[in-house]
Length: 391
Image 1: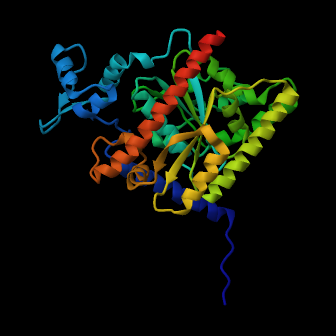
Image 2 (image 1 turned 180 degrees about the vertical axis):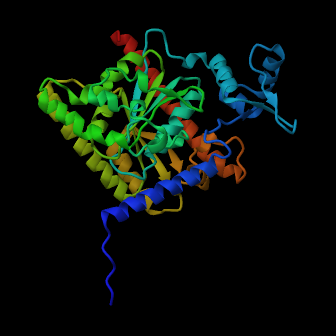
Image 3 (image 1 turned 45 degrees about the vertical axis):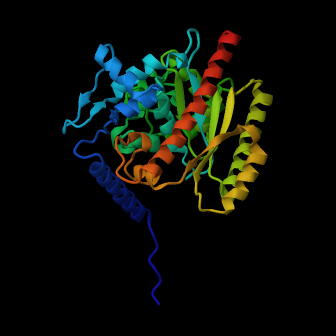
């Protein structure tokens, strides 16, 4: 019997090249004919829902001509509004949700030490959902894998330079994140991208700490955001699926945490490790560095919920008993809609018109809308807290 040949490093290099080539091929097909994603368009019905008004009011305002009137589609069968148009309408009708004068951007970190829990998708749809409510959002991809960057239609290792990531902050080459910010296909969302070069931050940050005992490795991202907190309403950070130096920076820069958690036994056990490791770290920082860290809110989101999985009911009970009021009263279903949109480097918000079962689409879209609504309440409360504290 002939034994299989040993796998060499060069074999792994070849495999990496094939994998990268395949991703590029898939992406070029999904985004054809251009390599830039296109934002969705909205019908009158969808626009009315975003603004919280009825269709009659939309028609009336169009006749007044003081808001974008949209355009007829190629077939001339329905009026459509661009994302830019829709956000102008939303900002007009949802004045109550605007950031009050004197308040600054609320920073939200989406984290979990386990992969495959919809962490990146949650960060993306939350950014999109909040922008559809009129907010200006900065999305920061802090994961060297660059999955959030990919969802924006940008290939991390071929289209992202190191200067477009948070790496210069880690190196100490700059004290502001501003130069790394780029616009995206989605009006209202700017991006700080990621690439595999971010792995170096895991060595640079502790090295700087060893050379300079006064250097605070955990505060680099927080200080780097200071310059742009008046430019945005919300800053959303997608973190690596591990307790890394970059993850620590994201958590310490955040005003709130959102932890996606599928209701299954393995993910529940992993979440316990997440909180244990983070609490140990935070306690050590408080004790050794004398810092005082407070979060305005911490939310646990039930994600990738399979309604056919009977065992998930038991795990739901565990989650409710463990996290109590931190658990958001909404579940993100595991549906064909979310699976197919992810396969196309998109989310439910990227879909202008769904060709499949509308009930399935509505169930997924409604769940994400509800998450955005709930998080928006926490953001408004955080703004009020800032004002009361004179921040």
